[in-house]
Image (cartoon, rainbow, N blue to C red; front, side, top):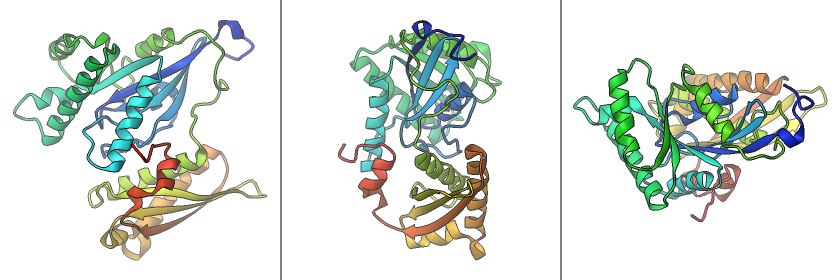
Length: 319
């Protein structure tokens, strides 16, 4: 559907924030709603560090999705900045979706629940308490319902609805797409009347330097997620358009300790080579042109105190 088919006076546009505990599936849902990859998805929790805006179209409505960092109990400066960013994204939105990992939440209540399941349930309780305190009504989306018993899901849905913070409930699988179209239709209904904020064919409102850094950071965690804790960041230090139409990108991967540098490099530099190759392939596809990517690994014990990195991710350093 093109701009000429929908008159400006018939258009709707607004913001939908997706909040939830780390690893609830927020990034996967944003990617599913937009039909493209705008937010990194890894098996590590807490990989989204800043509000990535994905843009989803539904008939005459443009839904600007704010994919917030996971809401959890903050300990460090970076944690505080991420949680503040998440709530700011929610407060500025026209509609808010609270996404909960249904399988993990149910597991947390039983003997088979892991420490991660119980932590996720605690983070969910923190979110519910905050919503109650601010008298905020939001949409509940129970995610990862694949293979779960319907009576179990209904019982969980009822128990959560009884908290009084939800206006309605959707059961979805962001991974398979089950129920996502119904949620998208509901979000479209919540958008206020007004002209579209972005071109119809645009899927993300992320500075390309930041998105390039996020793509490389995803590859770092995909390759070394067992050995490397949350002590790595990627900064795009140069992004140049070449006369032949290609892009030359320079990036620095920061780690906190000298012992982590060889983990990222790998034997004979093979790990870094793999990271660079996978990132280059994805960036070339995203930019639709050849990409020359140059990676450097630096040790900086205080990278989490870098104002420049916080600014790159749109986070408030002074929270």
